[in-house]
Image (cartoon, rainbow, N blue to C red; front, side, top):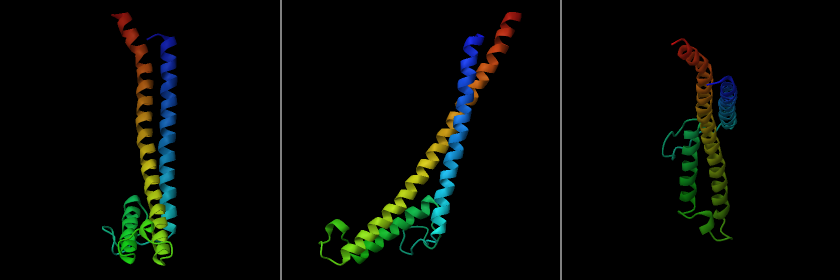
Length: 150
């Protein structure tokens, strides 16, 4: 690999390393912010949740469990009817609406956790590829010298 070929490979490797590290930090920061905001709400997973009942909502699993618990409670209060199934004048319609809003909010945090994990995972891959490119660029000179001496 010539110097004119090696330099762009090394540059792309450094860009990949920096971008990957930035993605890892950004994903981790997002995860931390979502966790902090959920924790500050002091929400405890309801007892009728399918799992993690009684734990604090501060991670994607407890947020998902609480959303499922809210759904179960809402359906119990509305005799299994959703917001769309209830008549406009039915007083339970507001209960169903509030339950749907709470579930949507919790699912939004679950999605935020998923995106943060995806960004961190992609950051690891991008940084790994960047590192590999820098090693390829660094190793190309040694191989040429080895070939020249042989």
